[in-house]
Image 1 (cartoon, rainbow, N blue to C red):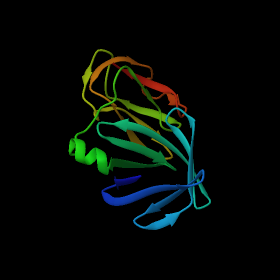
Image 2: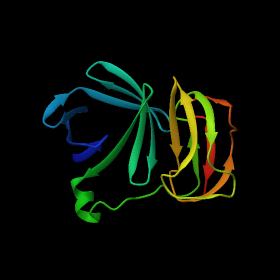
Image 3: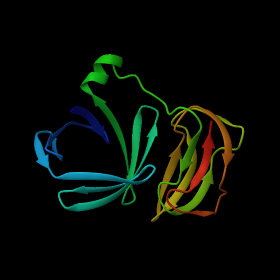
Image 4: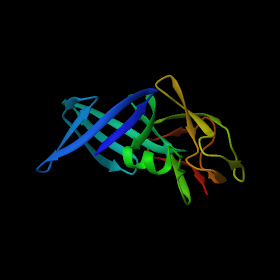
Length: 165
């Protein structure tokens, strides 16, 4: 499988092949040893060339948001077949979505209330972790069903903070 991805504005060509059951990855032609395991919904343990990363992923309008080691990355993934089929059209999450805290931290700002209408990618709240503030965004356009946190509250990684339908 061949993909073109854009991470933090840099375009990369990713290729995945398998030898037996072993996946082989190449990024821009450079081979690397990599493996990923989903440990809970949206939370992955990733091993790249012997280095371990805990990564929290969430889908936003047409892109992914990855948070690891206190840093946030925006990722746009397109495989060649998808690109030809829809020429880069974006997709939103469907159905009722529970928005999870990507990391443990403190809620410093709540930007929406129950009943508010939001669009995909709109900021919902701000979490402070390790002296960095991270905005949590809506995974889809819709209505806020429930805000499960208040300003000043501490949250754990994976805790439901907002429900959007």
